[in-house]
Image (tube, rainbow, N blue to C red; front, side):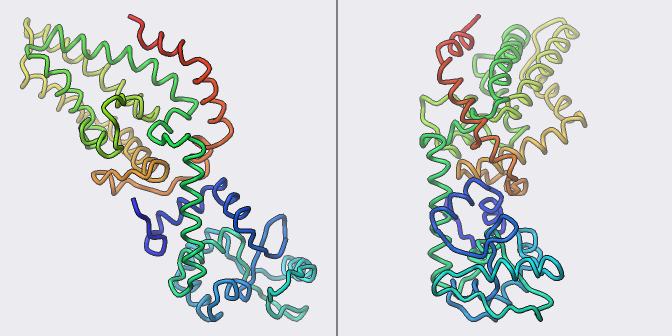
Amino acid sequence: MKKDLTNSQLDRQNILNNNMALEEIRNTSNIQGVWFEDKVYFTKNMVAEFFEVDIRTIERCVSANLPELEKNGYEIIKGTRLKGFVEAASLFNAAGIDIGIISNKTTLLAIFDFKAFLNIAMLLVESENARILRQAMLNIVIDLVNKKTGGATKYINQRDKDFLHSYLQEDDYRREFTDALRDFVDMNQFKYAIFTDMIYQSIFKENAKEYREVLNLKKSDRTRDTFYSEILDLIASYECGLAEMIRKKAELEGRKITNWEVREVFKEFEELPHWKPLINGARTKMASRDLALRDSFHQQLESYIKPLDQSEYDKFLGAESDQVVRLMDENRDVLKRLKERE
């Protein structure tokens, strides 16, 4: 999915919230700034020089996007911090870089940390240097995710330490559901696919076929192998609860129930009020993660998409997730036997 950082605050924030990507961008670009308070900072003059625009262009950009930039590291300093920055700036001697006029008489100074500097690059449409940096950012983010996942982003869900528990226990609830359909519902074999799709539609507004198309899954890919742990847990709750309600309905009627009666049971079940916050949370997680990590867009869930925060990137791309992948790889045969157990 092609991204235009100048038009999408969501796409901008997804990059700016990813500290691993920011570090990679900083190392790759080697952009030099003033080292202050253990971070790299830039003055307005330095930003204007780098992007080869008039300083008034930077001022207009800041004014038009102030809340976003302030959230991402732009600030105006004074007092003791300003004195500390002036001292740090006096040690800055990169050739050809003009930090601007700063003296002991300066009372207020606007500064940008590296994150805010990249934020400016994402917003400036007037600068060719900004356009080049935007493209570099997008490429680095894609390369980072591909490197972590070996190019298989469809299984990035399995890098979550909670995935394995959800993955293994969901089979038991799935079996309860299919057994209930087998024993208490008077329909042909299509009932398993039909009512599974109803669960998917209820939770994330897509049936299995639509979901697979969004993720571009191959015929050999198992749909549930790509679900996040929270989605697996919610599906398991649905399957467990529906199995019990279907059984009770059949026992009450003294016979197997019909397609229409199952649909009535399902409607009653999904309208229980406690599902609403759980479903909203699951939709937000799935749609937001898939856009940021898999570059997959769930159109039906567009209104639920939010930028990922750093904890989400740590969960799927951090050191702990690397360890999860190693453990799963080392125990692949054991996991396969557990999944195939009766």
